[in-house]
Image (tube, rainbow, N blue to C red; front, side, top):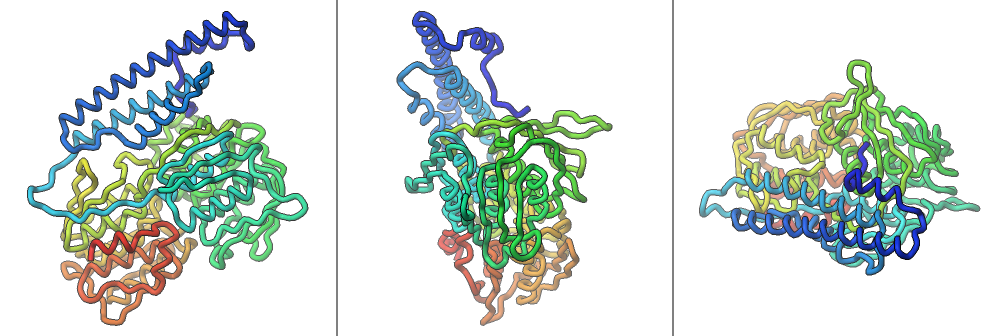
Amino acid sequence: MAAPSTPPEDTMQEQQARPAIPGLDALRTQIDEVDSRLLDLLNQRAHLSLAIGKLKADVPGAKIWDPDREALLLDSLAKRNPGPLGDEQVASVWREILAASRALQKTCTTAAKCEKVPSGQSMIRLHAPASKSVSHRVLIAAALARGESRVLHALSSTDIERTRAILISAGASLEDDGDGCWKVTGMENGPAGGTDSPLGCDAGGSGTTCRLLTAVLAAGRGVFRICGAERMKERPIGALASALASLGARFRFEEKEGCPPFILETDGLAGGDISLGMDESSQYLSGLLLAAPFCSSPLRITLAGKKIVSWPYAGLTLQTLENFGISFLAEEKRSGRWLPADWRTLQHIEPGKLRITVMPGTYRAGTYAVEGDWSGASCLLAAGAAGKKPVLVQGLRTDSAQGDRAILGLLRSMDADIKILPEGIAVFPSALHGITADMGACPDLVPTIAMAAAFAQGTTVISNIAHLRIKECDRISACAQELARIGVRTEEEEGSLTIFGLGPHAPHIPQGTVFSARNDHRIAMSVSLLGLGEGTHAAIDDPGVVRKSFPDFWKVWSLLQ
């Protein structure tokens, strides 16, 4: 069970032995005990701070401590009520101390592995955007929590705006404190839909919003109408709808069966056992996981289908549940037996051999920070390898659970020169070579790698990506067609793309060439890489589409020109 850390067993036994309504003397004794334990915790924190100071002195300029974790800890301690502290509050501080200790150990390890840049080497400094995937999940969880939460460093983009708008319509309050900080007051009794008429929920072009919130809204009460942009009418959601229907939700598709727009009616969700296909999207699982704490009994989900795609995104959702105090158990089937599994270390998952049980529970309000986005930063990192100037990308956690952290391994396998430095990730111009890669777990990186492959010598084969054909556009065909504009030969199959690189020669963009973004932010950002070759810059027909995930992309990209 991925339950939060708790105080020692003898302390827990003392808590259970106390009467529910103690007398005055007992209350005073309880307060003294709580104050004593809290003082111990603060002393532990002081020792950690001393260790941090020593490490900073040993590694000049190193960012030894995660500033987000430090901010969360200080904020939590500073906001404690002046009155008697309950046991849960002390346990919460205890969990934070333990989490801070683990963060310290990780950052110390990272600092020890930091490399050095040759003296005199100048780099273009670029900052990664906030993670879109994490922003969605943290805002949703905060909106489902009882009480007030603060979300720090959240992304501001069109997709996130859609998620915020639907959460507000369903009963949450989200106040903008500026600089990506939001004060979120959670829904009192879960999502509330319409009674006489459906509550309108427009996901726009955000598949993440549509799929995650379809499940979350189904855990509430009332009638909802989920719709979106024209492309959304072709993006399937039938497997998720079938799973939710088995738990008590009712669906009526207005146009194409299994796709938006549709009417959702619900009186809440039952728990139980369900099987879920993961062939099309991991977002089906993420939505169910987020909704599961509202089920009337534990929900056990067995991953089925022919293959499991984009698992790391489901891992991000599990991390969110853990951070917000939701208990769950991951189990792996080995030798015919179901055994507990560490979801953080799962990589190659076979259908029918993993199940996750989520317990009914209450999301815990608090202060939560959003980390940098590896997906959005992938083009910035690739620019250092394919371009003519080294780059330093800042704002990324090298211990992140984001699956698109795989961009480092992919670029390195193409012979990119990458160094992990205290202040960020440095990538240097490199003679790239083609690779063969299964990218089923990191589909959002495919456009970046496909464009970088144009600079490489040899052939690049990207496989296990059939699910890219149902993204914002058919990304396999989009990559092939945009590369063809500059004479790069490709071969498409249903679930793969082969690129015949031009290396050692750089791509040349003919005068007057305009690339098509196809209303897809990933395509727009990735084709910009081609402008780092010869000829003119990469002109795009719809540069504004990057607002979906990285609104400041062109401002950041201009630093490379």
